[in-house]
Length: 467
Image 1 (spheres, one colour):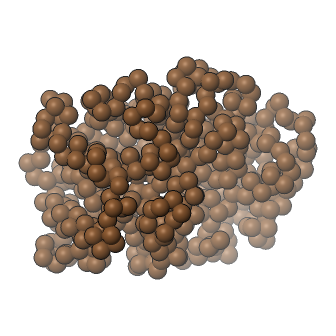
Image 2 (image 1 turned 120 degrees about the vertical axis):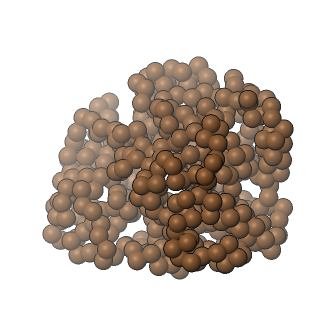
């Protein structure tokens, strides 16, 4: 049965749909605290019925009455990516949970073992307000705006799961003619052709996909692709890509921070002021160091996420996303939202970091420095680039050149010299920087090519560079 035709599921959705997006504006800080405390207690009680969590809580001697609110969250044991992998499929749902109403959703597995969890309609019902909140911040009407999602629609991937479980059944709320779903791995000219016909107001995709679309837009393709905003997720957006894409489409790009484990709502999103707001009425976010000890606010650490809504597989103190973030104090942003913020956004996974011989470690976005170089040289002839750390002492920077601009402006030799110079200075002595022109940078499994590939595993003891 369509859940939108079932009063038991449709009415909670309608309530959340109408009122949740404005919650952080309507509620006082004290009321938000009470709401979050209640949400954590509810989440903890539910998680305790799931074998994976029950075993952990029992081993820790943790009882239901021990967690009365957010202030007690540190008492709850962490759950890791290997925990989810090892306990799938039978121990990540409550005993007797009706699997018929669930869907399996999986990560791409591009960084190792694929993680699969269960999701259901309750997750989308509970998280819908956070999605609408982002529309409000972009000054777009969710009902009339034309949305193009260019993602991964392979079976069990997040995009296909959201479409099959939610949007395909939501025609009473979302008009089908206002949405188009395109596989990001189709030939780019085919994507451009369909977008040109659809004329989207809002496009959502990966940074690398937007870069390729912008390349063709600059070549005169997609005359009718004139969006009002671009929303990007799935990997790190560095400044050169942002400038290149915004110039091509004549509108702003906005970051959103989502994952398979947080399916149903973005953990954080970027407002018009450039602030990354945490949807803290939907998620509790913490940061920890290499020893799993708390990191004080304003310092870089690994993200820990607790989802405060929905059922199916609960996500409580989950460490498996492994992204670097700096969690800052609650911020009164000029956009009108008062929330905790991710200072300078999400800097990428620990496994994608550049590790140097002297013990320093750079998150992906901190090491890539092409924006300042190409801006100073007033050129956009770099079509794509990637940093590949081969060893502790050797790093390749792969560059694809726009053939139409090869002889325009500064020479390739000068550009490569500047790229090598700035990255050599950042890496320090003893690290060989090789700048190489290539014809292609291949995609990863299920995702476009990442900004950084490191063949060095950052071990305990490396010092994270705060820049």
